[in-house]
Length: 104
Image 1 (cartoon, rainbow, N blue to C red):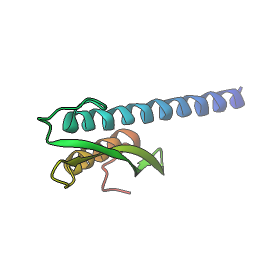
Image 2 (image 1 turned 180 degrees about the vertical axis):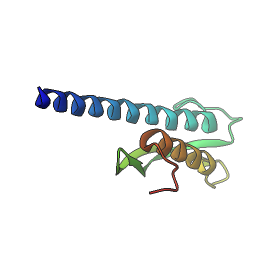
Image 3 (image 1 turned 60 degrees about the vertical axis):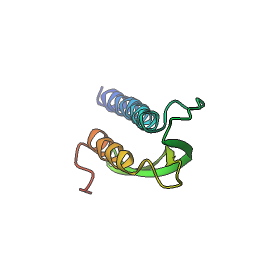
């Protein structure tokens, strides 16, 4: 019975972490869409545009994981996503690790 409870707990934690990662990916995508508009849709009025993806390292479930997130650049060539990346990274650390991003 104890073995069954341990297996259930492990399966539940795995599922929660998978759902959390998917939610975090959606947050990153929503940030990119807010800054640069929908992917694949062109607009002459847009100030920023998508610029591929980059890896981000985050604390998650007591360990550090690598996660891909979209990159956004301003049309003038500078980074357009810095403030949003920091916000999302901090939010992700709080949600996934239960602590502030600055604490390790």
